[in-house]
Image 1 (cartoon, rainbow, N blue to C red):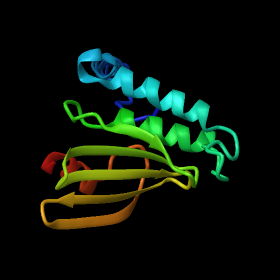
Image 2: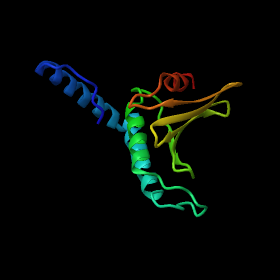
Image 3: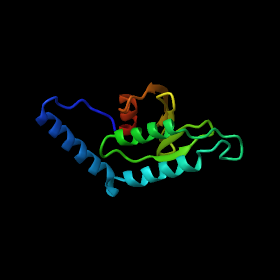
Image 4: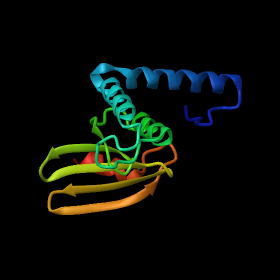
Length: 147
């Protein structure tokens, strides 16, 4: 769980606790698709935990990478479309949003606490790397919104 600071007073802590609980209930809602994607993430992490999980020398998905990926999902703004999830041979976890052949975004979770992204927005291609400290970088939120 990421601490958001909340208020220092008992009332502030109470409000922050209930705000977080309400957000978690919304995130867990099947209608928002979060439970399914979290289950898929867990399955992929388990299936890809050992070296050479693909038979071609793939690196294992580490607990750190899984934890960061889980935090990334939890930080997605409410109402965001849910991505698909996959594993990469270099041990990274990838989230993809595919609206059409010309509207797509791929975000890779790196165990060092960074996210790499690449998107196609019509004829425009954008890519980059951002630190991940428990909040989705603004640039990635913007791209998700443009899909």
